[in-house]
Each structure stands twice: as structure tokens, then as C-alpha cells.
Image (cartoon, rainbow, N blue to C red):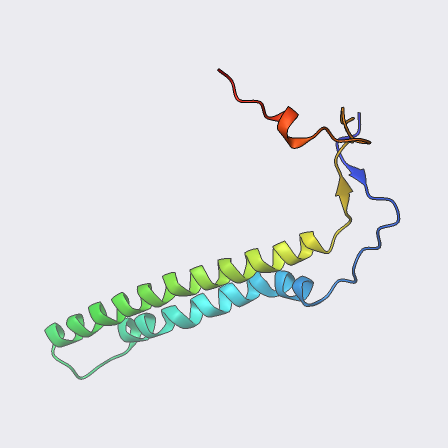
Length: 119
């Protein structure tokens, strides 16, 4: 039994930008995540002439903004990846379901006789 029957005569579309997007998404995600983490790392590594409490306050604020930006960026990357995957699937071969016989396919019954109210 074949679960998927290809539609005869269907021509698949040429691959396009969706394949490029899907291929580059891991690199785009890593570069973006690194750029979003950089301010937090630089604040911790640098030798700043600032009072320790003010530096801790600044680090906390930057961490909160970096986390918010990272979560937003993750949502964006996932949405673009899902969109590219949907386009990839839609450009693939077409499949048809198995046909099933209809009782009144050649001469449909009148609408009144099909739906009789039950008493």
C-alpha cells in the first residue's frame, strides 16, 4: 500500500530563496546571538572607572536588554525559518488522496430527498 500517490504530470517548481534562507539560518542565528551577548561580555571584561554599585546596576540593565533582544531575535529566526520551510514544502511534488466512489456521482439526488427531517 502506497501512502502517498504523486499527482501525474505535476512539475515541481525550481528551488529559490527559501533554500538559501534555510541553509544560512544556523550561521545567522549564531552571529546574531553573539552580537546580542557582546555588550554584556564587554561590560564584565573591561576595566571601567566606575563605582562598583553603578557598574553592577549597568550590567543588570544591559543583561535585561540583551535577554529581551535575544528572545525577540529567537522568535524572528524561528518565524522566518518556518516560513521558508512552508515555501519549500509547497514547491515540492503534489500528492493526491485515494479516490472513493460516490453513490450519486453521475446524477445527484435532489436536495429535499437527501435531508429529510427526523420526527
